[in-house]
Image (cartoon, rainbow, N blue to C red; front, side, top):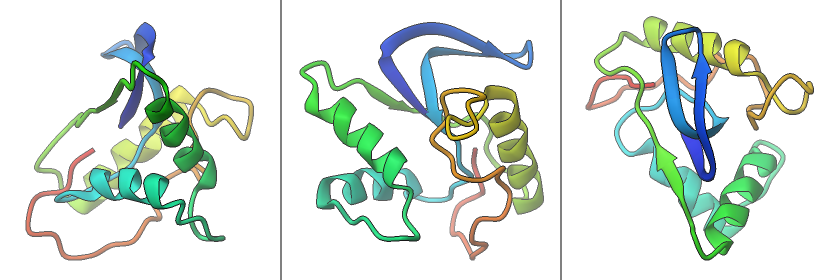
Length: 124
């Protein structure tokens, strides 16, 4: 999960999870997946299959003097099925911006991302 720490919390969801900054992206990841989002925002690697809203949000935050983005892992060592289920839960609980339901830049309900072998456990 990516948090914009420039927009102070706490933001509480599901009466269980509290975040110090505003969540703006939720995704199941493995290994160093989070750093790929930052690299893409710097390279401006925008194409039809890339979430340009998320990349523009990252770029906007990084352009400010405070530059406060947190990458937060909610759970670790999950099966892929469990990680996708939790991803869907958070996207629904927090809400997508494109649907005017919340602040997330996610383009889907979650759970349908690429499945691939990971040297480390799935994380969300």
